Length: 467
Image (cartoon, rainbow, N blue to C red):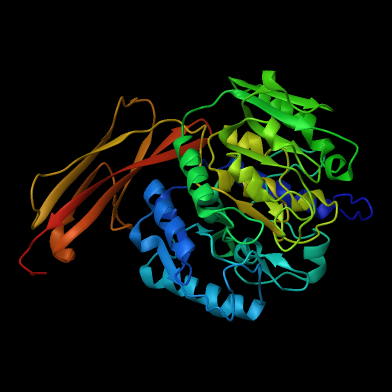
């Protein structure tokens, strides 16, 4: 990894992060839900289709949120890593945003996830990850801001130095309310299955383990392995405070050590270090744990050097890595507070983007909706039996409901919002005859974070074709 002159956070960066943290603390956070995610599929790749279909099933992504686009072989052959800015705009950005607008999801969809079968890097100057260009909504910052890590994400919650505070954990819903039209478009990739990547089978197995980890509240050790490599020293200032915060969570133990973890530390609920490679065969990760090793080419699959992010995915961990030489600039990588956001119940994608100041050259990989430490919320829908017609009453409740916990109910038909409140009077004549999916999303307040879950029923409507 190349080293640049040591970087000191300018005063304007501290002010920017402080302002974002203040706004975040003023509103409760909302863990991301499947109805708020766009799933992007390359219809020219069988692997992309297969992996997206599995993920859609695992996470109950509404059909209306699945966006199928076509990447011709002249643009991307399924094995390459690069796409030009012009082709990204033509074949990915425009079709995706037009599909979201057409489906009525512009205000509802807060993040996107790319299946496999996509390039990882856009050949801007300097190069950026596909998720980085998506994040800035294809509006590229000045080259120096990208290369030097000077761009600061509006979702970044700090800290910017060891003596600065970290903001309250916030998530995409509250950020959207704060930023309005300036809201970025956070993105992840499920897996990379090209050269030096992983197989579709390995990706499916990993995603199944991650989905099964939801609300399991795994106990274990969060390990910071430190060494004298600049890959490690660039983040050392973050570790002690983050470890202290992690140790405040029941069932968690944080360790900062010059040694690698041993059997007494397993399972690892998180791992962070700085090294070209990590002996993963010697580690045991809890499914859905976040881990990375801050190396130059973790997501540069055209390079044979350095361990690739897909090795972490195979081990069961969610991760991120840069698609181009990032230099030893900590702002381009997740800081140690990624684990604190995660332990508070945020999803993986929300935790990652709160922890990266400059997410333009990094590629987050894995299940964005994984939330191992979220509380269990079990909604139940009461509905009329049989085929429906005319006006129909739906109602929702929560198993073992606590009357002291405030709940908010939102109703969706075929993935789009139709009503709020515990009860929903559906005029079935507003929908075509045939099968439809009715979903209720329940948001629960817990300390400073609101968590959500949903129940869904499939109904048959028959009004004899009358509207």
